[in-house]
Image (tube, rainbow over all chains, first blue to last red; front, top):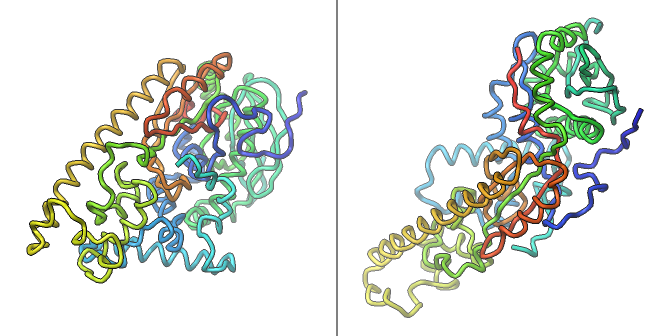
Amino acid sequence: MDRVSQSGPVVRPTYGSGPGSREPANLGDILERVLDRGVVIAGDIRVNLLDIELLTIKLRLLIASVDTARELGIDWWEHDPWLSGRDRELVEENRRLRRRLSAVEGHDAEGHGVQAHGVAGHAVEGRAGG
Amino acid sequence: MAEEGQGTYLYAVARDSFFECPPGVAGASVRAISRNGLVAYVSTVPLDQFGEEPLRRSLEDLDWLAETARAHHRVVDAVAAATTTAPVRLVTVYEDDGQVGDLLDRRGDDFLELLDQVTGRREWGVKAYATPATDPRAPDPTADGGHAGRQGAGDGPAGREGTGDRHAGRLGMGEGHAGRQATGEGHAGRPGPGDRQAGRPGTAYLQRRRASLRGREQARRQALRRADHIHQALCALAAAGCRHRTQDPRLSGRDDVMLLNGAYLVDEARDAEFAELAGTLGGDGVEIRMTGPWAPYSFTVLEAT
């Protein structure tokens, strides 16, 4: 019986780098697959993830901390007089979730939000090509 | 059979014998349930974590979700590295092993058919990013910073005009703030057709804005066509292809706007050819990045009851 290596990096090093430019899978890559794709089983299972769409949207917001967004130049909520009420709600929710996250992780508020989730190793990579 | 307070968590279904896996969700070990020439990869999980009510709460907890998704993926990935695999969606939890066995009995043919479709093939992710800094047709970043920031949030390819963009986003949002404009790349100080309108900054602004929106829309359409073209070219070589939602820059970890987030099922023998083709589709303002190989998540979509 074959044995599979114990550690499970997202990109198996054995495949190395091919001709194309590879990037490591980020949390979003994984989530869009494990949440949105694959075999969906209904019926006798205990949980029905009907709210998954909502969840992924929340996730996208949550991943962008206010600080990270600011670094990216996304600070429109501070100045845009036409900011819709809905946007304001989202921003507020984002802040709230971020506070919760910081509290949970004892995370320095000055740090990078994305990294705070342990996503950074995968999500952040060289931007030299940009 | 699971004891009281425990459930059976299903990761994936495969043929052949059982291959050892790294620990699964909640650190649980992974074992096999075999039936009908199929193997279900499962763990025993506590229902105080994986019951319906606890899950409703914990799925809203990003840390928990990320950790669980990675653990799930790790198992699927390991199985897929060893044998042809049909991944099952995250947190599929049964009352007990018996129910999983029933599933393999009831839907065995469907699983076998699904596995046939992905045998000898692997999934590759291909993302195309707009790198408009090198695109001479990209709209002038200082023309209408007002929306650059918003676009950066993910609603259009034209929002990221390179390094100036960050600045533009700030400036634009302060459109009414004369002080900001004066210290930045103030529009008023720039020579050009707008000068004529210096006395009517509102009109000038609207004109600039209109022109910019037109350019932006053009660039957006062009980018969409480009993404379609790349996707079609890759699909022609792949056994199957599909498009995921493009990722927000914050999620992708890149400032550049993602034009295409594709997944392609490729014959293993054509991996190199596929990667080479993907490489040739970049350039001219578009950067191509690959992820993978993945277990065939995107091509084992089956609704089983």
